[in-house]
Image (cartoon, rainbow, N blue to C red; front, side, top):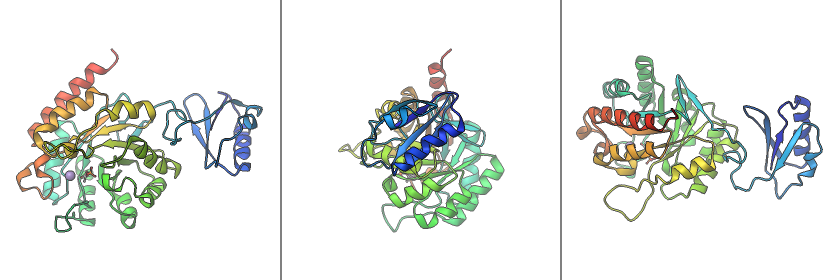
Length: 336
Ligand code: PEP
Ligand code: MN
């Protein structure tokens, strides 16, 4: 249930609603909006009687929430969530491009790529310090040394940095260095990690699990919001299907569905969806055409020597072309 307060509801009227919610053994979550405050009711065991609230001063409406996810749903918050990272705003009306190598390999590698992607129009730099690899024998990332390199990249280029957290144990360390914390596809339902992300003060980029439905993905985001962190960016990165012409199948239909269901921003990672360089630019154009709020692209100055995901990494000149093309498409979609 969502309690919608009048535009001019007073703080003590809001408090009174919260205390009725708590007397029912539930949790009240005030959601400030542009015009009015709403109060979401969490942890209820069954339906709640709206008449408990409708007669209280300052209450405009009590609306049952029909979706299993609440805080992430448009039923609870109609206005789009905008997430500020440095000078970049992520969300409706903005095109955010995040780019960088799959893994941070060395300071010179990260710096070379960061300068190139910045010049082409990337606003955020992404590189993995902790890599989730299918094989335990593959390069696992530089760990703390990689995080320190990312901090140097931020210092030198001014670009905020995005990097993945793999486990609960390293969350504090990643949170200290990252501007945006990525939770990867294999961890989408790692519930202790999601709960920890709910306590974080930094935005979380939550990738869709490789076999997750949209409901499961939004429920994973709900863990983070319910834990107290409203800053979640959803990232579609392809789901597993029977096809063998690409690593995964990019589910672009997720974009209009998520935009209808949720106020959270959604971006597309065509690199991990495709697994091969030649599909990345066309898929990026399509992603912006279906009104994703941004892209996350793997770029490497020497992909043939990359320690991970070289085959899907764009050369810097291809990335430049991609940026120009998607900016053009984005421009045509803006109200004139
Ligand atoms: C990555 O972003 O480098 C990555 C490993 O992605 P995913 O979790 O989507 O496989
Ligand atoms: Mn990768």
